[in-house]
Amino acid sequence: MRETDNIGRFYEVDISYPHHLHDTPNDMPFMPHASIPHGSSMRKMMVTFLRKERYVVHYMKLKQAMAHGVVVEKTYRVLEFRQSPWLALIVGFFKRSEVGNRVLIDKQKQLGITQILKVKQDVRTRWNSTLFMLERLVKLKEPLTIAIISLIEAPVNLDHDEWKVVEDIITLLKPFDSLTVELSAEQYPTISKVIPLIRGLQGSLVSKDPKTIIGQALKTNLINQTSKRFDGFEKQTLTPGFSRATLLDPRFKKAAFGVAQNANDAEKYIISEIADLLDASNAVNEHAVVNLEFVPEQVDNVWEFLQSKVTTIQSQSTATSGATALIRQYLSIPHQKLNCNIFTFWNQQKSALHPIGDIAEKYAIIPATSVPSERIFSKAGQILCARRNRLLPENLDTLIFLSKNM
Image (cartoon, rainbow, N blue to C red; front, top):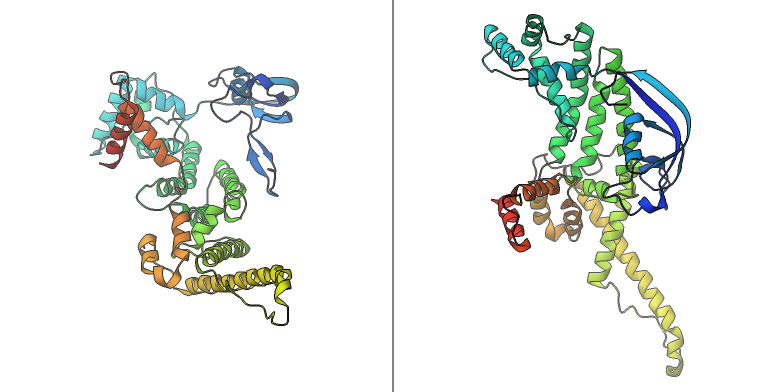
């Protein structure tokens, strides 16, 4: 079956990865599944080479996996459904037809539109290209409709209900685009923004009021999926950096958390980190003295274990209480404005809140996404091309650095 066929299928199958393929993939294995990782109590989407039973998969994903060696051992059920390209016919026609594109431009001029636009094609590697395509179609709705009526070979236009669906989809996807832009930046720390932006995204989705059945179903699914995929970011599990960076961001602190207990858990771990730094740098009560005057000199060594233990307990107790006082002092400071530079803030508070600033900066420098590195990778592909393929590694590194920073 081809992706453009009018019939699609879902399969329920038993599948396995042959052992000889385990070392061959250059990317993650196919067929992710929900499971609980070792050492965790939270169910997550995982990619493994394990055998999967009664696995439900779309026919295109199954076809791709089988082409790379995944074996279907048994098929239980096949769910067949009707599908159609829908917008692809309209966009494709005006992208490839010179006549159609010219008529569309002429209709815009006749309607007095000063900024002439063309349809946009979505790109598989960029989810927001679908949003941009839909937005462009809505902007071109009137001239597009007139152009389709004027052209004999043009595809069937969307009806009133379908245009309403497009408008609902745009409304629901728009917050995701804003979040993507915010977290893909390189000029400011992004990791501490993840939790507040996700909570803002969820609140925005809840407030939307789609008018169509498809829009309402999409809204419900988006809310469920964002909760399922991102609620774990607040917890101290596999990704504790998000919650700790958020708590140590003076703009957000505990206010950004959706669950108060998650903020308290992050605070406990940060207190522990502060205490370790205080204990290491100050060596509190390192020479605590145990009154051993009644013990003869020749048996002093039998009390060494007690002296060592008391010293450790006193040191840990003092460091923990000091760390707790520091974090409370930090949390009592008023929230900073959203345009606040957190590195400037911690530099100003270096003497009063040391060593919290060091911990905050340690987490703040972690990028929230891989977009910055992907941009550098793309620049490398532009620099090292077929006509410039004999660059020494050190020269390539230098050119990439200059291209990125100039």
